[in-house]
Length: 117
Image (tube, rainbow, N blue to C red; front, top):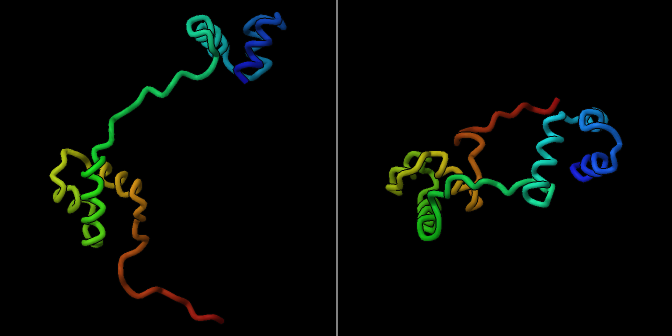
């Protein structure tokens, strides 16, 4: 869509406002797209800005995996306390997801079933 909008502006198929209306985008978006192309030479999206690095990587991730395999009933808080890492419970959750562990869907107990009628 970026390329089509720029092509329409470049071919003088109307003002920037008319092109924006035709493609259903805002005038400011068209202006920012033109500015991006002027500054970088490309209309592609900018790269992701990054974010916080993972708290559990390398040997810490391996230790966490072994701990969960040996003690599968530990809670996220228990795992965080055991690890001694300066992290949050969600950091433990994300590490477990990366390791392929799935969340328990229900607590242990009898399954509720209804009889066939």
